[in-house]
Every structure is written in C-alpha cells, then in structure tokens.
Image 1 (cartoon, chains in turn cyan, purple):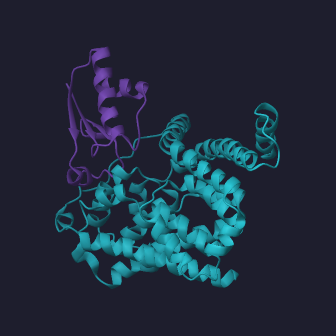
Image 2: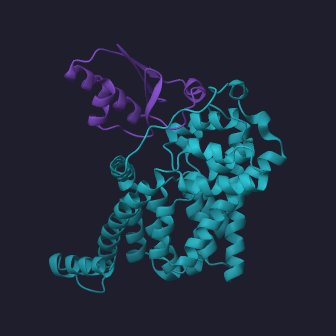
Length: 321
Length: 77
C-alpha cells in the first residue's frame, strides 16, 4: 500500500521536475518527496487511532495504577505507561509534583518522565516501516530499559535530596477528581484535536529530519561513513552521543535520519545512540524541570543518559559486529 | 455567576483556552468569574496533572488539551 508514495515521488522527480535519473540530486529529491508524504500520511492515520485508544489512559489513572504496587511492577508499569502516555511538557511539573505528593517513589516517577519523550508508539511503527521491526524492538527496549535503570539508580542512590524541598510539602486534595465523562464522539474529536496539535508541533522537525536525511542520502558517499564512523572507530559512539546532546528533535523527526544512516552502513549501535540522545535530552525540557529539580539532579540526569546511550551504542555494535 | 478556573502553567494552549472561554462568555452574554491558575503547586494540589484543565464551580469539566467551542457553551449555560 505504501508503494504509492514511491510511485508518487518518482512521478514528481523524474516526470514533473525532469531531473535525470541516477543523479545525486534526483536521489535526494526523490527521498525527500517520498519520505515527507509517507511520514505525514502515517503520522496522521496512526495518531488518530492511537489518540482515540489513548483517551482511556490519562496520567491521573497512571498515578492510580502505580500507587502501592511492588517496586518491580511499579517500574515496569511506569515505563510502559510512559511510552504510551504523552504529555505536553508544560504538564510535566504538575505531574511530577502530583506523583510524588501522592506517594509514588521518586525513582518510579523519574522512570516515567525519562521514558515518556523517548519512546513513542507512533515512532516505533515508523521505525518498523522505514528500517525494520527488529530496529523497532531495539528502540523500544533501549528506551524502556534506560528509563527503568535510571529510575532505579535514583532510588538506590537516594537522590531525593536533589529534588526541591517544597515538592514534598505539597498536599494533594483528598479523594479523586471525577473525570469528565467522554462519549465516543468526544474521544474521536479529542483525538483529532490532538493529531492536529501534534502535527503543528512536529511538522518542522519532520521536514528538517527528512531534509537532512535526503541530503545525506544524495550527497554523502557511503565510503565517508565506513572511513569515519564504522564500528572499528571507538570514538564514533561517544562522538555521536555528544553531537546529539545540544541537538533536539521530536522523535518523529529522527526517523528519516536514522533510516539513511543505517542504509549508508552506520552501525546499528551508533545510530541508536545518536537518535536516543537527540530525542531524550532537550534544553527546554531541562529548563522546565529546573523548577522542581536541583542542578545536581539535572547534571545527573544528562550524565546518566549520555553514559547509558554510549553503553547501548557499544553494546549493539559489539552484538551485531 | 459561575466560577470558572483555567489551570495552566503558562503554555500557549492554556492561554488560548482562557481566551476561548472569555470570547464565548462575551458572545452568549454569560457573566462569569474567570481565574487563571499558573502555580504548578496549586495545580497539582488540586489533583490536576494534565493542563490545560478547566473547573466550573469547583467541578472538573475538561483537561489535557484545547476544548471545543460547543463544549464551552455547555459549561457556561
């Protein structure tokens, strides 16, 4: 079914724009048209379906489900729910305070917060379609594993002291708020609203991602990657992670970049390390979290993630090498 | 007069929600007592985790996104 986008890209590139087949420019333009149309199509359809299903899962309910669970179950649930529950970054502070003040351990709360921007079910499907389902599996496992271990470390090291003390003094309202009743029609209209909203927020990342992907696809020869970034080059993984720290993109924007890097022969581990680092660490998010977390905790957070992605990179390169 | 509270930490959607309610109240001639609560501590302590959220007379009617105009009219009537 998705071949239609290849056909469309071919028609526009070769027939409409009259670019000669086989040239670098043709490759880049073809890639750009095929990937933009395909990603926006998939994004819209998937987000509508996912948004509809997700209207049954809210952070308020997640808090309930996590409450009083044995640690191992709480951590597993936190990262699974983190993966399927997105929240606008402006909600992350009330959410953080509400989780802690209702007695959810800091480690479990952080596991949820770390996983949420990193693992996204729509991106998982896009990766599967563009690269392969084993890559999707690696992506989801790495994202959830990083969140779970990060949370557990914060718990073991007793890093509660690096949370601003006022957070622990907040008293939650007694009893539960009645959730507003939702009809199927309302759920669908919310899903549509959410889809439009997310599209507005990510379209630029997707275009930039596809643009960068198209540029690499058409103009950077495979030999460059083999020479500079093969698994034999020990510096490639840490370089990829460090390069990505100041970069930020929504996870849907990195799909086309990852697709091209893999196609050009960049090892799976290095690619994973690069994309995880790009989506997980964002400066605006850190600025927001500073309201509730002390600078030491933010430093720990960034340091841990960078180290985790470097280990992931080496691990996968070694495993597949 | 209904007491309408909008909860949001200052993000664009939260401000838009407040404006939508204001506009709607003006257009249907409903008199409301409108507040915007920015403080994340107060938001969390009221039990709200996803913003923008809206309470009418202390009852949660909406959370986690932009409301639509028809919904707002229902709350204000």
